[in-house]
Every structure is written in C-alpha cells, then in structure tokens.
Length: 69
Image 1 (cartoon, rainbow, N blue to C red):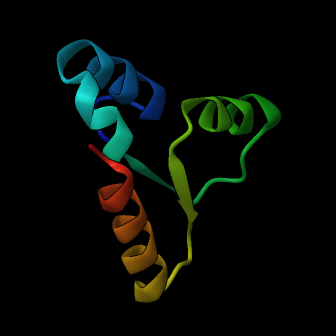
Image 2: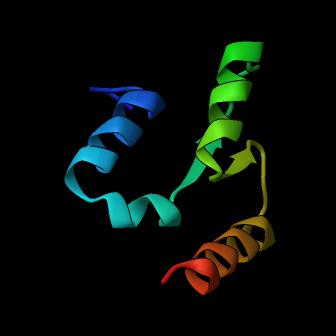
C-alpha cells in the first residue's frame, strides 16, 4: 500500500471502524519473516498469499461475510 503497511492500516481500522476488523482479508506477496507471520496470526484475519486464484478469493470473501455479524 502506498501510504501505510498492513499493521498501520489495521490499527487505523480498529480506531475508526472496529466492527470491520472481522471483514479483513490480508493479501501478501512477500516472503514473511516470523514477526509478520505472528502479527497476521494474532489478528485472526484470513490471509491470501500471491499467487492465488479467483476461487481462493471467493472462499475468503464467503468466509468473512458469513462469519461477520
């Protein structure tokens, strides 16, 4: 992201619209180090690793929308 990374975005989302934190799917193309991987796991959000196909996206969207209240 051009202006902030994933953790900064997520912190801002928590501050502004915490209800939407249940609807986040992180997308990464990076080789993640241990800290990044642990942070992503701590959010409880789904993560899609590039490359992924349209069915992966469909499943992720279905999962977060069906779980969100």
